[in-house]
Length: 317
Ligand code: TXA
Ligand code: MG
Image 1 (cartoon, rainbow, N blue to C red):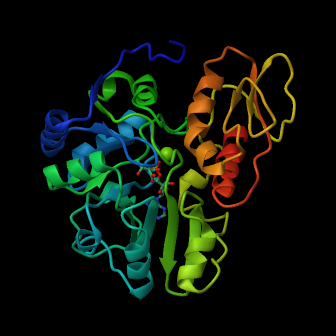
Image 2 (image 1 turned 60 degrees about the vertical axis):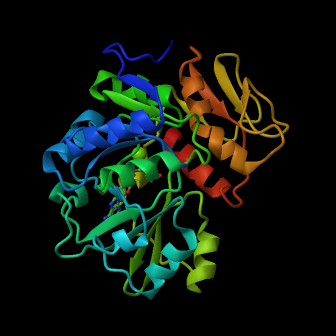
């Protein structure tokens, strides 16, 4: 298959009770395992184990100034790692389990390796809804640091095969639960003393957060990049990407939307949630198409469309 990793593959195993128990044991022993979540596949390791966390950075080729999200089984467990004020608690009650990551003040005695937070006084926490990630969290009894399971800067994985192609044999076990339902990484919200910031748009929209907290977000200064997912170039295929393309040249692979057709279509019926779920898969296919470039049809900016366009702008940068 095009995009196949020349260094070989880890084992892709259907997620069932036996392979989830195997994954939990491997994680307790300090290993890394790729695990599906409702957003994208994550590359998980014990957040308290410095060597295991170092392995995540090494396998992804991730710069060490880019901190990791820690996955927790529930809100109560999360309070061991971070300080929740009333606003943070309200967000957790409303949106967890689900595709929302909260950046909160780190608890002084939090059992996480220093590399997880990359020296920041805050920690990013997420309680995932996916039953496989939930089962592995509970079976292992660990807090799991898990970035998206792709080479740093590349297209995020929404299928087990994407993980194996991107990370190769360095990831010995990939639990397979089929394509991810949301298909875009979690929304990241930082709860600050004086308000809140949207560090990464995602499946939970800024409007939903603003409505719950009763105030609009504070601006995020570009000069101080706290979420390198927000770096200008990210999620990048190996070919140039052109946006707002109502038509494509013969050497371009055209990713359509709605009635703007193409070689592929994110959602023929113009459904943005469906388009989000298919976006990274479509970019992977465009990358493997053999065409010189990828052209993407215009996507409306409403609701989750804002997160789709955020990822597309970075893929094109
Ligand atoms: O949906 C998701 O969030 C997926 C799945 C696997 O859970 N994970 C994910 O992780 O997208 P990753 O590492 O690809 O993106 C984590 C983002 C990065 O942009 C990182 O800079 C930011 O979270 N981040 C982590 N800790 C932070 C902190 N203390 N302050 C600000 N940003 C932080
Ligand atoms: Mg990522």
